[in-house]
Image: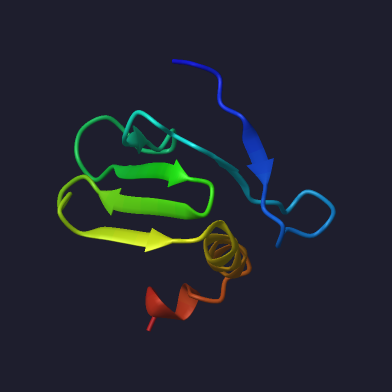
Length: 88
């Protein structure tokens, strides 16, 4: 697989909590955190300002977002802002 040119999101603050984006020109890539089998997260970044996300069990449903919006979501998830959704 060719090397990718990673770019830091302009919405990332200084420090370690940054979102980096790379163009993935050859289609979908499976998340390195996904186990073998089903229930895998796939990601594609056809351009630097668009990120596409899908779940392998339902590949026709695709979420398209921006690096900045995905960064906000990831930081909120890490901060526990969605924990009440799994523990009612």
